[in-house]
Image 1 (cartoon, helix red, strand yellow):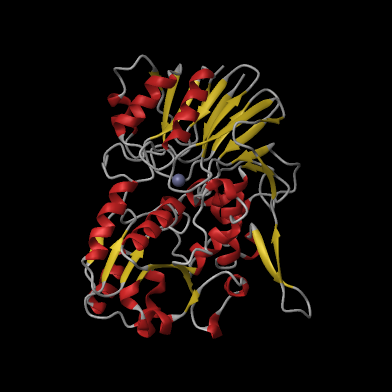
Image 2 (cartoon, rainbow, N blue to C red):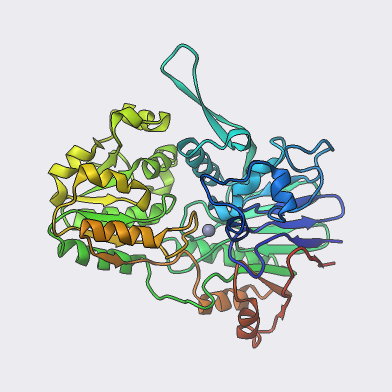
Length: 457
Ligand SMILES: [Zn+2]
């Protein structure tokens, strides 16, 4: 007997939490933050969830006994398997009992921790904490969760389950598809996936492995079912080079901190246009945290034409001081940028806009928005506020983006290739359209309701 209970992520984008139960074992596939439901009640940072009990009573996190920090009972499940580091797939692990094992790739773990160490304090619900060493000018970074590394392509046993993850192409590195064998069923789960990025061959590898596993069920995302945009990463590079070449002043660009392929793209844009790429401290801290992963070809912060923007010395956080202390890194402050605007391509979001009072962008500067509007994977982009700032600064906006998610025809090709018994569309606002669109394939489609259990065997 194997079942899947859907707690978010069906009929909506994000908040995936799928409870898989076999005879002896139960795990969650992803445990993501449900932005849409949280936004109905909360307004971060001033009105934030304070207690998992509150989230439970608002129906934002699932009522599964024995898994949360405040629960007194024995641990109610055997672990969480995360597909990737985006917050809508993993951030709600912060409410879980710290002893619950969290299984994911090491890149995913490092990104989650880097974001935690460089973000606002989450108090009792921290995944990691940065603590000052008593009496010394040193900081200790402590991971508070029981992470277990899964190596891509290698089998991990959890109770009577066998779990294999394969890296896929998505808008953050380390993203994986998961193949899960119970004693009587096989489930394949894409996580978030695309075929038009720089790592397409990874997606091909997962599809091949999933096909070989002959899954009973394929859980497959469908974010872009009603907006299949045809830009790829090369288009972003080509178009951004054009904008930068035609801009005489400073060029600023906004993109997701964890999208390291986009950071690489803008590095290529900077090189092609004779500029220096200046990254934000939070982006740089993610790259800094991944500097040991030499085989992954991440952008090096030690490159001559890469710099890190740090805010005024008076306001620096421990993670910024750590970046500042690295001798190989080129640090720039507002004064430096102000004096070299024509030579700089700068990553800059709405939340950095206070710095423009010091930078003073010159006449003839431009802004490239390189994320989807109004949501990206990590947060809501306050598009109206961004536009107000750009009007104030007299900076025109160009939108140049390639999605982290597969196009509709790519999803259909993936399903046809894997050829599962049953397809369950998840992470989509258009499940009915999805089901109709693939109805000419030789597969059954199941559309689950939120909170419902699907019995596989
Ligand atoms: Zn994602």
